Image 1 (cartoon, rainbow, N blue to C red):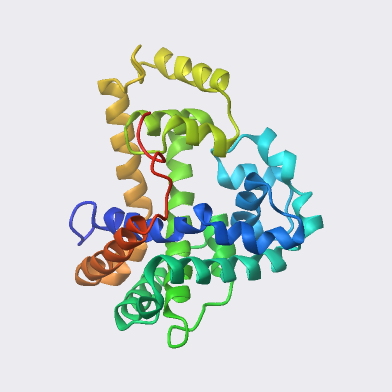
Image 2: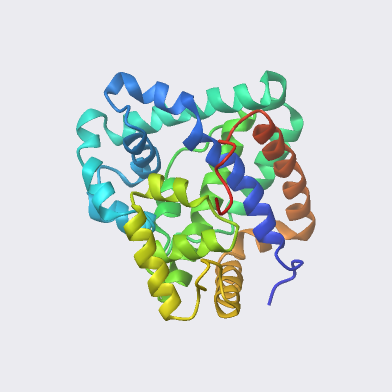
Length: 290
């Protein structure tokens, strides 16, 4: 049972995730890592997200990221740690986030009281998180928390990251329970109209058109996808169930914050996320089925 309005936690996390994800599309991230010889976009993406795990191998990264091709991951990991240690990457990551949020939101906004309020609320929510069975969340939870009084935008981003990975780890459990493999999860999500456009999903996750078509055929055999590439009624029901199951597994942080706090954090984070998007945080063709 939950005392929160339906999908309240999901809406809150979605807004926070939009802020977290600005890092992956920011030129500042590549700029910070290029001096260490990490300039390939795939290497940059893998390094900044995997760094909290330490100098792990490709198997660990593939397992925890779930929807990435192992072939792609193994092309860069663990070699990337020879160019820069995880500690070096984490320091570069935080500098990149600082530069990105200042550029997208403006100098006055990043140090404003609304951002500090959002940071305090998000950090309170993280107190309801669980490390158990959540490797990416747990790894990030071991990192220092930026001080809210000095850099509220970094504290907010840190908390958003913890909440993003907490839900993500839970979502992987739901996907496995539904017997959706890595690429089937991506294809079905894209078919729902909620994920990245196929060309972006294939490029960033390391798949090609043949891989994509094969996953579509597997989903059709299960009655989840129609001949036109759209979800069937059964497929739509499964995706709905997956999100609801993820909500259930991820309710702890938002129960900790309470309905009023969740509503306020959603309002604050949503406004910041919209401002970031309007400032060009994401490619224009990132989302959709095209």
